[in-house]
Figure 1 (tube, rainbow, N blue to C red):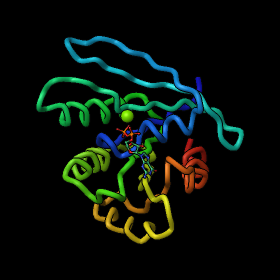
Figure 2 (tube, rainbow, N blue to C red):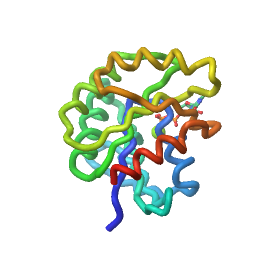
Figure 3 (tube, helix red, strand yellow):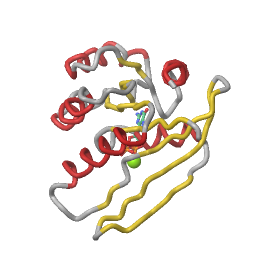
Length: 163
Ligand code: GDP
Ligand code: MG
């Protein structure tokens, strides 16, 4: 069985964009659980000769106010149970949010390799802005642009090293 890398983070940070870039082809599994459409995306890829599976954990659609709480819980639960490494995506365009802090707090209790990816760093002008994410207490981070691909190679180098 190949190693599993889970992509977690609050909505709209760019998890699915990163996922699609990593696997280049989308495989989706949709299942219905008590009114919640859970749309989990799995894909296989390889980097530096190492094959692994990627899970995009963000696809929850539910008509409830506590969607965010549920999503965070499920994502981290999934990451804890299934993943060998975790990519935690945050968004430099919005900066640190309360939801990022909640996810980070849960992830700090996870005894697995965690790679924080500060996404939407589309140009060098954004690199310095990423420093505010040190406040999440997860240490160093990778600046990436899931849209243009910059920085994703360095991120993947580190991720496969940990598998
Ligand atoms: P998710 O909810 O975390 O899965 O986020 P999505 O992948 O759906 O992306 C949310 C929005 O952010 C979309 O409009 C994306 O096009 C945009 N986005 C994702 N990655 C980047 C990036 O690297 N740079 C910029 N500028 N926008 C991005
Ligand atoms: Mg998504």
